[in-house]
Length: 284
Image 1 (cartoon, rainbow, N blue to C red):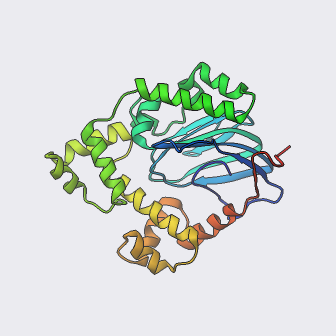
Image 2 (image 1 turned 180 degrees about the horizontal axis):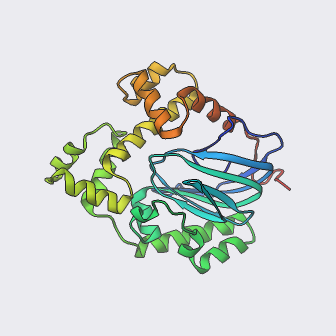
């Protein structure tokens, strides 16, 4: 499945899914990463997109993606998902092909050119952000050219895009460094602010409150540990900063609508999707 942090709702991946993943060469880019994907799915696959501390941008060249929110379903070829402290429902099927990019929210603010709170309840088309470059990306003769065009495009957007307030940027980096294990009042005090202006400006620019961001960062740590499958739930809870196993279970269910065991099972199923390296056999 090409969506980052997306797992099959049914807890398993249907038979017959073929997928090829492409990665750019060269050095890793600071604050963002990307991949190309080509998939063939014999039947629609409902996915649950988990809470995330990163902005996810998908530019699709294949069949549409169905995004379900508040009981309504809409189709998109490209979507942007901001920071979120709840699960999203997506359905993909047919022939999927395109680029998926993940970036730090500070960079997402600059790339998209708007405060991230505007992404709440919406799925803007990434092609509208990229303009004519979206056509160049779709029509590129190969993946190396496509990645080069994408890197140049992102660099240009970052150069002219807005910057988050230094105080907001510091608070975000501190939260991320502590995996959410820091109180909002402590962040505000270090900045010489009261809690309210920090919460207001943080939410406006990054689309989520500091408290919710801390919650998501803690969850991501727990989800990573659960996916490894070698630790008991009590150990995962302690290592991820939860008070106890019951606290972990409540938070996982609230954020994903799954129990920790169900989350672990679905993550294991997704890890078993047969990927084909670029240059080898691809989905036809």
